Image (cartoon, rainbow, N blue to C red; front, side, top):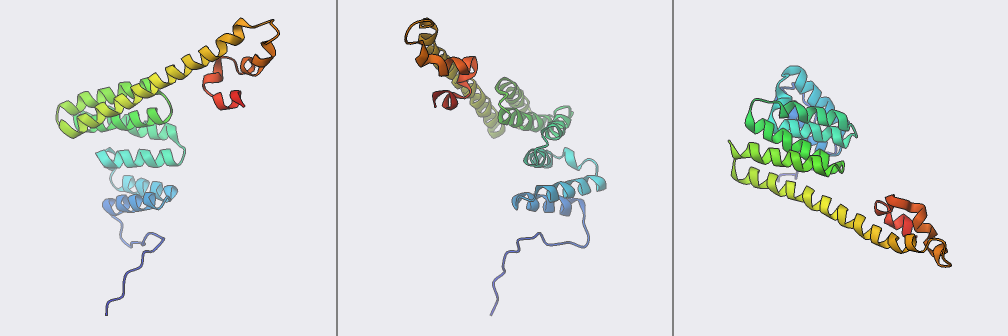
Length: 193
């Protein structure tokens, strides 16, 4: 009778590491949430083959590992290396990865530009799905920017009565809003409390 295999919580140690085994170990470590270990494997793979970080999916995964570790400048640097690639597909992936990072950081205008450039790069060799994905991501950034503007407008409308009532007997009701000032749209919950 065969015994079922049980899943080990630790990555299985390998005696002989190649570039691919390091990359696969990094992917497994990322899946387990062990980002520092994943980074060690990416660095070891890079020591064997310095071009490994320029492979499309590996570059994206390495940058994502840096993001998970809170090392955003290094993630951006990894993605920027792909953006200057002479390979159009690599450049497109680097632009998309940098767009994700900009979107995650709340830099909506920058993310829209990067996703648009990624869409244009995808038209050349990749087409179809990649171009469509990049265009949808640019639309997400645009929608978020419009939502942000709508929030700003609503807060401005909410503050308008307070500005009109200054010096009146009702002005004390507006003092919490005035304390929040023009940044109220960013933290409306704090201002409404």
